[in-house]
Amino acid sequence: MSPSTGSSSNPLTVSGHQYYVKLPTNYDASKPYPAMMMFNPTGNPISWAESNAGFETTGPKEAWIRVYPTMANNASGWGAGDVAFFQPFYDQVLASFCVDKARVFAGGESSGGDFVSILGCEYGDKIRATAPCSTKPVNGYDLTVPTKRQCKGEVTAVVIHGKNDNVVTPANGPKTRDFYAALNHCGMTTTPVMGYTDTLSNCVMYQGCDADHPVYWCNHTDPNYSGTNHGWPAFANKFLFSLFSGI
Image (tube, rainbow, N blue to C red; front, side, top):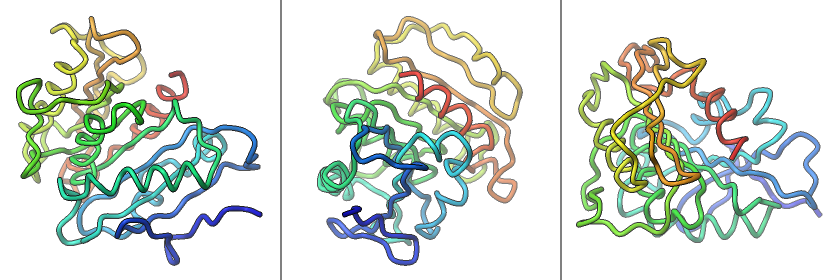
């Protein structure tokens, strides 16, 4: 019997949060698949990530389990109070589907990006890579290494932020970047990421990070999200699928 995946109009529920799952084409319940969990921004419907993150395109659609959760309170967004939800959510997804435990990925935009930044610390022993986008500081959860936050393991991190973000300001992305660069013991030098050097992506990789846990910084100028430079940029799905498929 096939497990229930839910849908945007009829979601599943766990620990006070709703979510639904999209399975790869020709899903085989005996074959472990990578899982991408994509966290939506404040004030947007549960269907936002499916419609806007780009993981329903060729590639992820065939290869990944895609999981789309939403926050407990849409008006408040994701916050430190949601951290406890992740463990039962993770457990329920892994109990229901054939997930490769070594390849669970998490992405998020705006408050969803804030939350992913937290998850990469709190659940670095369960998440392999994160992609926080358009982040800001979270009340009650100070990302400071190592004095304020003792993380569980390390993750590959792709920190994405608009160079001209006029919603959370350009200054907040570097804070998330620096957190993960410190956590993974990266050096100060960076190298451009081939294929993503234009201003709409502008990705670099930090050198000297701990083995298998690189940190990427994409300080883009994509005007997405009503011209605010705050949105999930168009390059992100292709870059993340290529990068995460190789780890």
